[in-house]
Length: 383
Figure 1: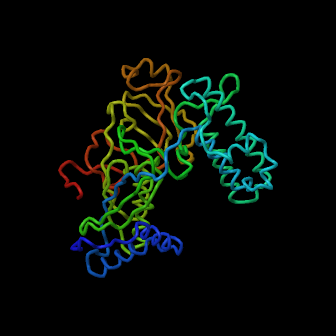
Figure 2: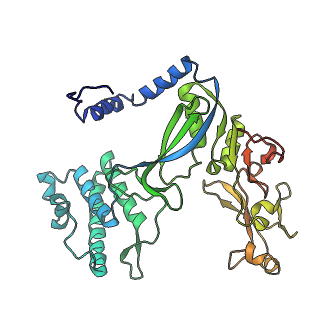
Figure 3: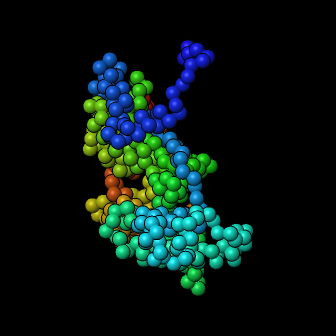
């Protein structure tokens, strides 16, 4: 930076203070928006652009906490925001709850002893329920409601009753589990099966020609990479005044919802299709007749039996089921059917015409290809 050795840098907190002022006045993206405007004025960005979209991990600033720590700190937070740390109100609390205000330390037990841990968990749950009862008296106060909701969510996400009805830490991880009360927006996330992180994800969009970043949108770490593609495209167009005519992304973004959304907004989505693990019995090899409401399997068996179910976005879709006896007699039964009680089930996608890939799909697929078909093998792949 061409600075003298005796240069005195600004105080370490200067940037944090400046950022705090930007956030206070809702101008935290001022510099970013200004950069985009300058890029347009300088001719680096054309009116219609192609964006490259991907996600990256953003590690959280809070400490990841175990269940007992989350409950303990949750109790302390509710009591403090409700004002029970003040002497006049504190006198009305039991000694057990007062202890949470006097100290924020873990209980002095043998944490290596399962019986001791189970007993302490019972104490924490008992005190949490008592704290929530106190919070009900001030349920009209927003801060108290928020703190009580967090504590209730922790109890619901992390605990299950055992056979005797006593609380125990549940197996697995709840879908939207809180991992830190220091930063309540942190979540467990994955970029791959072997790469786990705690924090958030950032959806990043880069203009292909200039390589300028035109959008950075934070999303929960446990959200799928492709879930917020349409939001990113909308943000690019709204913030920059540019028109996105093509989006290029990896296979996580090539969902039926995204392809349908891009078709609606006349955006060409280029994203590779997933290759089925067992192509011969994959859903793509079943013939689906939407008008007749029938599904025919690769062996020629047809079912008209279906029920209406909800997909992961609570939308109503059809779920077809084949007769169990017919499936058992089929030579593909072991590969095709995984249920122990019924035949093969095929659940239709909400955007069925936009989501059916051919079995040999291993090339990038454009959302502008009619009914979601891949271009002929001699066609040039979009770039």
